[in-house]
Length: 145
Image (cartoon, rainbow, N blue to C red; front, side, top):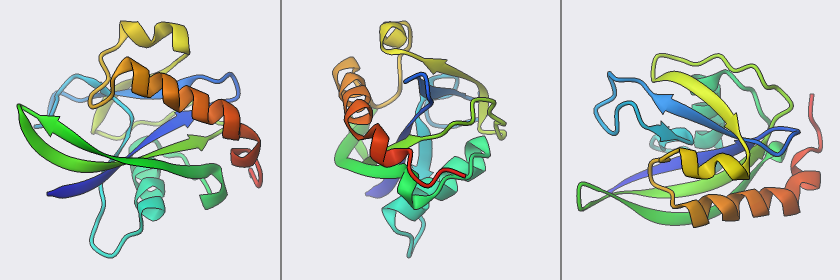
């Protein structure tokens, strides 16, 4: 089974970054998701998350701005697809440069969660990520450059 990372990236307004997968993606085209992808051989969870964030949305975060939260099994088409390490991160950058994997992005608050079907996460799981960010944001904001 594949192991991957998905990072809930928050800004100074306590908004969550979500990105719409491009139509060229084989898995879940044109659906909203968090930022992430596969862990490459020899990579740590944190390093994989930092690499995926840099590649997909051109944000350069430090290890001190990211926190590993949990590991969950994600199913797709009624099959176990991959193990997903979920992380929470903070950035003060709000203008995002997407790569070809995504067609658009939005910063959303808790109240807008129901407007989006975010791949792999229930509303309750996403609310928990907001709660974790609220509790850990002082830690996540240290050492920003």
